Amino acid sequence: MKSTHLSLIAGTVALAAITGFASFNAPGGPVAAEAKPASALPVERSSLVCPAPSTSELAETRYTSFTPPGQGEGAEGTAELKPALSVLDDDEAETDPKKAKKAEEAAKKARAKADKPVLALKEPGKPVLKEASGSGSPALVGTATGRLAPGWAAQQTTKVTAGGTRGLLGVSCTAPDTNFWFPGVSTARARQDYIHLTNPDDSAAVADVELFGPKGAITSEVGDGITVPARSSVALLLSTLTDEAVNDLTAHITTRSGRIGAVVLTADDGSGTDWLTASADPAATLVMPGIPADATSVQLVAFAPGDHDADVKIQLMGKNAAFSPAGNDSLHVKSGMTATVDLKDITRGEPGSLRLTPVDKKRSTPIVAALRVVLGTGAKQEIAYIPATGPVGARASVTDNRAKGSTLSLAAPGATAKVKVTTSAGSGGGEPTVETYTVKADTTVAVPPKPPAGFKGTYALTVESVSGGPVHASRALVLPEGGVQMFTVQTLPDDGGTVVVPSARQDLSVLDD
Image 1 (tube, rainbow, N blue to C red):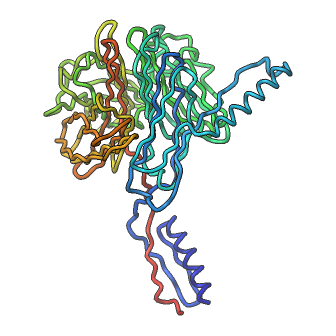
Image 2 (image 1 turned 180 degrees about the horizontal axis):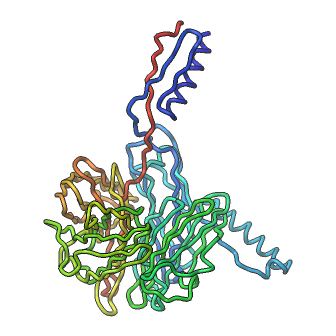
């Protein structure tokens, strides 16, 4: 009977891990599992997707991948990014047998190629790097398991030195989801904005794209029911979804079935190009960290998705205090409409972060928002985007940091906070270093990270909360080229490396041997 008792106990423990409480009557008497405080355990599986980096033959792309050490050390695992399948669009192949056969052969080769990793991580704490040239680099899909899953991060950084897509394009590969907001997109004639939808799963996903301008919803009959085939990526030119040319829009992407990764590639004639990642979920208070000190122009784009208008206070959290810019201390955002405000050179030579809060705390209307930031003037302009982002939380990482050009921005929108910043070993060697920073309430700290000693290649940055209030972070990477301050900014929200599960306490005193 003892073995039977143990089987029942094991079943109860499993149930308690899900519900937090379980009880049953065993042959020897009642056994109860009382709920205890929940605990955080490392995740055992993570997924990331990366868009196709560029259509330019001049593109030089770096892929980097990293998992911070310290969680899930006892379990082996893998972390691989593999090519997504190309979406073939050849109507003639459906009726021409020869073309159909060629299409099938091409599909077989693509599937075989998709099984070979572009980038494979071997161990926590040490990033890996791969470089690619030209326009043939595909979108990537990947999964990390075991000890490589908690906090897995990847990035692609692309430099294009000439042409209409000139600029530095950086994007942290994103976790797949079902709901995305992109304030700051455009269908204007001077813009070429592409929405990249990538499906990491083995079944097709179906997505809808809605557009909202300064006057409300934009009519589109081709934005509904967009199929993204299994393990494939689709790029949609935003201006083909509507006949209206609008400078400032908000795009809302949802899925009817499946999940996708979604990012927007923006290109502005004369101002460069970069990736726009999704804003944090709608909230009454938003933070956009890391506006460079030498920004020549900053534009705020905001959208209120609910049924109520929003009145928000605009504040720059600077080096020493927070203040509202003269003449632009607030913004009225009408329900279902995109609002913009030109903040010009708001930082005035000092780094800062933008905070939006309700003018009336009793009327807290959720909004989404992003910043369009410009460095330089005239023909030497370059753009980047800073979407509203969640706090670092327990931990967040960003990859592809260089010996020069990286700046880490830390903003404390509430109470004073302390964070630990670890620079990893380099992809080609070196020793990690650790620094601790205190960020005073309502301020921004911008620091060049201390590179790992003796490093080669690239390194990762990991930010961990130590004490105090929440901290929002971003990393700016500046790589000058031909007199242009080419730059890109990536935000650092919590990496989701742990999952909260309930614990149970067993009273086994009633069981006999």
